[in-house]
Length: 196
Ligand SMILES: CC(C)(COP(=O)(O)OP(=O)(O)OC[C@H]1O[C@@H](n2cnc3c(N)ncnc32)[C@H](O)[C@@H]1OP(=O)(O)O)[C@@H](O)C(=O)NCCC(=O)NCCS
Image (tube, rainbow, N blue to C red; front, side, top):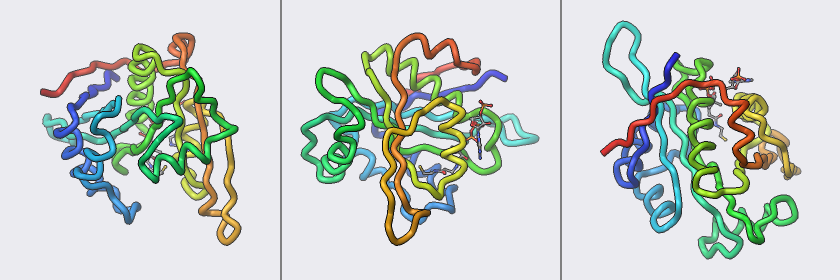
């Protein structure tokens, strides 16, 4: 299977993500286009979406998405400063470029078909080309699908932050070192289109 991936400029990508997130009923707090633009403006980032046909139709729709951006050791945004603080001692920033895989998912009907792997592989190719050294992602204990997927994509746990009230809510931080050798593990065949 050949995966079709669109790479979006900021404003269009933010609107596309706001739209696709409407299909993720499992997450109560969805990101708005404004929130996405505020986070990504002025910061190296990548917005990718995988398109696939609706069964029985020829039209392709976005079914999976992934957004990543750079994080720095001296973040001023409170949320990112908090994240970087929590990564202290688990991820080295000095003299290195760190990519944060911020949001992503696959619509339920298209899960298990390799769309997220294809996006992750495309993201890795971009990240290595850009000179990133490591990609970091955060999830929760209760997100079993995401944890299983990140395992398959060869992310390593770098930190576990226990929630003393509810272990479902405990945070798991994972990372993957980025270098051209990881491309040997890539499985997907992809076409990348830069959406205008
Ligand atoms: C996690 C998620 C993105 C996976 O997307 P997907 O398109 O179904 O994933 P893929 O089909 O590309 O699978 C990639 C790899 O992960 C594995 N995988 C996928 N779902 C899995 C699961 N539930 N358990 C274990 N492994 C899984 C696949 O077998 C595949 O491995 P392989 O390529 O080595 O064979 C999707 O289930 C999802 O959107 N879940 C809801 C989002 C979420 O949980 N977010 C949590 C907030 S961090």
